[in-house]
Image 1 (cartoon, rainbow, N blue to C red):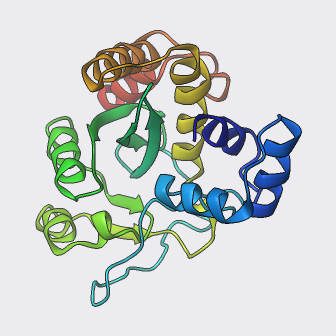
Image 2 (cartoon, one colour):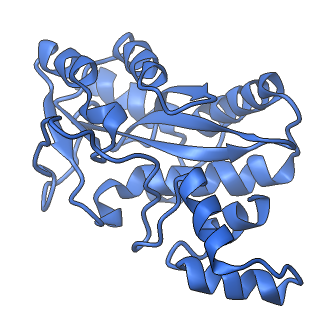
Length: 233
């Protein structure tokens, strides 16, 4: 699972058969059935390139993708959220983050040992203490299509947007965040306990927001853009 996680981050377009072949090249004779089972457990699916950690629950309302062609011009115009897999030495946890698209500022994050919707709602409540977006974009997973989550957004007057099925680029800024988190923090460490992962991830997100310059932001930090532009407005 550790190898699959790293290779998926490098080549998210690899499906089960390519992953099985790649593991064989590394000296691991793992059959296709086992790779399929492990990728499902981790919430990985080779589509171009979007991890699917959950599926919409039957009966939950789905919302259209509202951001195609939209120019992102200011903080709190669009927030995005997603879930990813974080490995531990033995086992794994799930990480959710909420990101301001304009500034790349991470407004909130939470971890969980399961994919219940509570940790996503907790992250949302945390983020709403900082600001309120005009549009909130997610995938169509059960955590984000649950009534308790969508009703919380609608109660704040937030327009809900959801990625099209199989459209990885619909939430591209969060996808880029995951690559940074994995390569700059997770893969450099070997978390043994959940508490260690939480501590390290917390330190990383402070660094990401406050110290890490982004080329796309003119080598400014997300915090400088998010709070600076809000004051200017």
